[in-house]
Image (cartoon, rainbow, N blue to C red):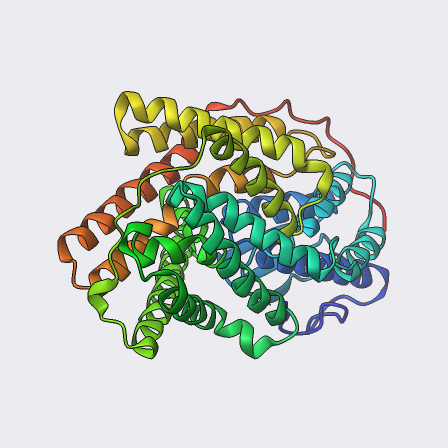
Length: 435
């Protein structure tokens, strides 16, 4: 939850009174709330927050400086004729309610164009924060299941993988939906979910090695919790020069991966299974090609429901998913897996940057997210850790080395893809909006 230090609705110590002081407080209060909402939805990276907040403040007639780390931002807001206001905003980054990011984009555009002053901007922000989730809980449950099923065929293209994933993903989705109203469960959700999925997998689905290794059977159901997006966002922030933000996010992503790995091990101990069973050899494929092709549509529909993305964005997201898969497949055949992932990340970032132009277009984060998930970087980290825990040292370190290479390829590719797209024409200068 966003928690400003000091009430931005009150003048700072020694602040100017009267109308100018009230306007300064409204501007500082709005920017603090805007920053908090951006932080809460910054699981995919925080490199754009400072620029958005600074440009919005300038449009309102204030000069803003932002000191940013992943969960905290310090704003210094200076309005002509009065002393500066300093506000500290704290929020836990996530990607659970992307409908808010979609609603925030036209608001910021209106403020920057001078069509909304502090009072109207605060009122619209009130409506964005108070709006209920666009889908009921049962649709979020269905979305997580579809999200996992779409990913399952990438792990192992077998009917058995799809069937087991349907059961395991339902269990994981039930826990995820339950955590929405249980903050204590939410804090340990990756550990609880991975333990439950591990126990059920080892007890019911991992008896025959012909069906593939237990880790490959577990991963699709746990993919919703795997921090592959955090890992690549951290690498992108490091590449963009945001060293503190990137390093902190990298540590947090590693912590989430370790939680998932510990949960898998707890399931191993609870069922009395040997850790040597944690191998990731794949079963022989038996899915027809049309199922593999259609799985990405299922995956995209699941992403929309699971992450509360407005349904009007489904078609552009689907196009970008298939573009990413097609580019990655073609490039991998020519230059190998790491090179193919890099080229796909460049294509995804460039296309998403172009399609996101304009206040009514989907935000870039929404456009990048589903295509980004197809690059599957987080699963490599979990596979590496669990394989090491099973004492398959060579395979485990091989997965972790591939993780480092692919994380770097995705991060650099996303930065390069956005850089290759020319900046849009600068809008005409407008006077600051009135209160």
